[in-house]
Image: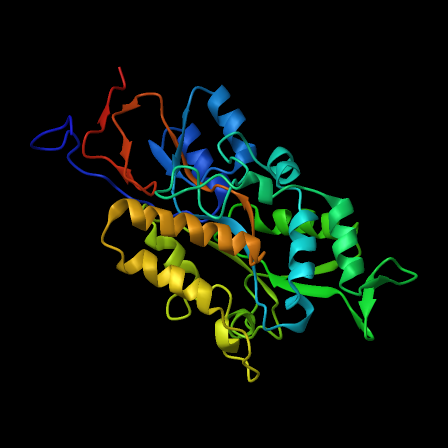
Length: 318
């Protein structure tokens, strides 16, 4: 650590401002020296006015969609694989984000401990997606929507408000899936029923997931049933409980219990491979923490999951 002893700044005043325009306006007007949560579409104009953009990696589970296999619509591996290959993450990033949001190459970010590049498992392949849905018995109706046993392939997901531009991301995914005959309905992230519905796989076969942590244990934290339970094993809060994956859970527990560091990273890699082999998750992109700072602000640093430190920061307004 370069800075030693007393911090350079006497105090840091934090002002909470929920609106993007208010935060950016405060920065541009000199009322703020540093702001959090710059949307990708605001990065370039802010930078062009002489301000610094900081994009700190979070090194955890990528912005993704997780399936709840207890829901019969997505219980078939072929359906999950089809929707994975119907998803074009490159288009999502190119359309909505900046170079600070790399397309996902695995379940976790490329800077995460234990990361393994599984790009070959995440290819955009509509022909394969259509073939898998055909093999699974889902036939297109007159409107192009696939049906099986009298049920349409209509899936529901709630928008996740903390994730950047999540509604727009899901809308683009919906368009992509529509081309292979699946329909994705996006419900508002502030709906009063969201919490209860997200715990019932029969109501929500999909959920948006992401968590930052610079340790392989982040995979267990996201997917183990006694932690965040991203897949809603044993039915979550639903009445019908069938799905459980002993192989996955053994890998997740191994990440938490293994004391040999190289072996622990190997188990983390195996867990990533298994999650994608089973198409339990569709990773979109690596989510950074994006900030903007005044040109006279220097010395800001970031810890392992993107939180800023002002211990060594200093101002030079001359």
